[in-house]
Amino acid sequence: MTTPADLYPPFGLHVVAGSLELRGMTDELLFELCAVAEAGIHDPDEMPFYFPWSTAPAGQLGRNTAAYHWGKRSTFSPEDFCLDLVVLLDGRVIGAQGVAAKHFPVTRTGETGSWLGRGFQGRGLGTEMRRAMCALLFDHLGFEEITSAAFLDNPASLAVSRKVGYQPTVVNRIKRREGELALNQGLVLTPDTFVRGDVPVQVTGAEAVRSFIGLDAAA
Image (cartoon, rainbow, N blue to C red; front, side, top):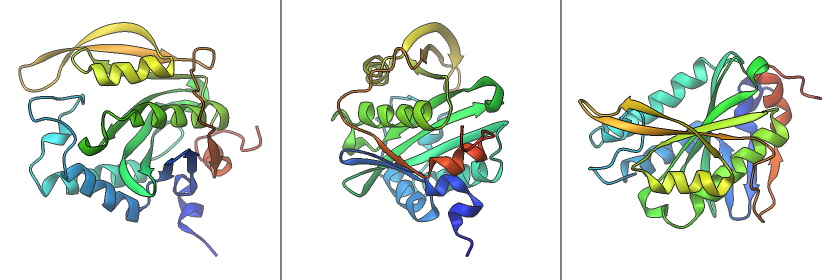
């Protein structure tokens, strides 16, 4: 019998790191994630994202979040994909962690991105979910490099990257909100610099995803 994970293998991904889980973004989990987004991600005067998607009005933010992830699902290919997972703490959805990649079978690199609901920030969870994601990418999905970036006025994100082992690269000047210049620090992580921490990471469902992103599942 065909299952949703047979049609879209990322649905079958499951990463466990202590009390944290990263799961494939099924519709059921996506609807819960939309509710977390609606409850708030950051202060109104802050903007941690390249595109200010989180400023959408109540009601619209949840619809936009669902539409974005549905769209990324429909266009997923080894040449251009976003692998987005839902983050759960003790079974409760608290945020999202993902990686975007282009021409992956050749480049073997991608950029991580994540967010947590405001009520779950400042507890070290961002570091642990990033470590779990990087372990998945390096150990199971064939990544040889992982990049990230954060605005210089977002010290919390920069601190997470530093704890995980990302190294700074270049600072780019980016238009963030209308008429606003922001300085964006580039970062890069390799297996040699990756700081894994003490929490073991268990992964299931990676073999089918390897094939889905253009790699030999047995390699």
